[in-house]
Length: 501
Image 1 (tube, rainbow, N blue to C red):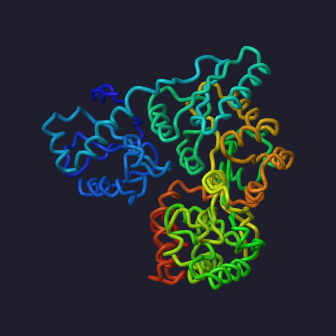
Image 2 (cartoon, rainbow, N blue to C red; image 1 turned 180 degrees about the horizontal axis):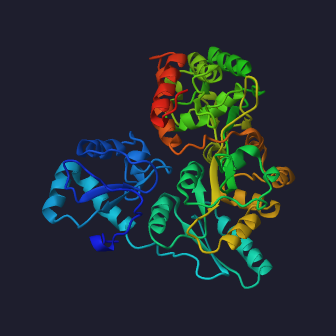
């Protein structure tokens, strides 16, 4: 799609455009969601160059316009717009010199993402509903969703549900364009971290009282939809991480931290070429998993109500120290390979259900199982996945809530979650259908029962990637102690959020 002329480009007017210093003033960056970020030409050059090697957090980049390898997150994304007229070719040549060819392409293609509206369009009448979801991720997903739609339309004569499937990598781009125009769907999928941002901006509706029975869902899954104590969405398909273990090396999985350390040490002592466990790295993925370990010591990351940072307190320090203590029996030179566990070079690893099928397919001779995460005082874990929300600009709110009730009821929750690659979070569905999940999937169901939602803070992905991940790595690499690294991270987070404690 070619970039539209300036007069055709529409964008939300509640945010002021930010001219880029040293780049023509008529060219501007405008965030789709979230606080204004100060950019300079030098920062943009560094941003593009570093992002090509996956070294920069997603909020620094115009994700709506970037190739897949440039996009690393889904919470924060920027859209490029022209604030007045399209720059002439000589100014575009200047941009190419300043930012490089890749950035110039970003500046142009970003415009196309902003103009007009989504081709899919919104709902058309009082009996027509538009639902946006991610493209089918499993062969059976299309059939399952189609049956759910057919059943809903039969139960509601005259109603038509338009289901629009969008590749996940393109979803936020199209949604940003729809929000900027007047083609917003009635209902759509959101990654968990986006719920708080959209709720605080008024982009999505609060769930009306009586629409959803909170007791029907696991607490952690439900809390991924809560902002300031209010509910803004329905859990759809969620997942968690658990402990994979090689049954030849670990006949009985550890339940406590002490058992985990003891078993890990015994494995490495018996064969120095084998690590006890693949210790997570200090990156965005490791930082996403780590709060579940903090919860295992009875801790939390933050106290949102009182604006307090808690991940520098003893439970969090103990959780990071656990990973540090595991390193002597789990040297990184052994576990750096992505397939160390599957190749029999590590007795244990922490991962999600996506690795179950991969290992079975690629390493059929490995005899492994999956257990809940070991803990110190309290069973706990993290949670990931998607929620469904009703957009403020949608046309059929009443029908939208009715559709979500149907989509997430005990009858549909399991088949939908399985089709989407996740697990049911409706308690009745999970308990009734637990046997339909294989032996190696049971641990993930158990983890969802005790999973803790990420903080409902719009900047959380930035905090996760830019502050917590480096803090974990500082301790794991021996540059700082666990306490020192987390104290530093907590202070940086307080400064970012404007919190005093």
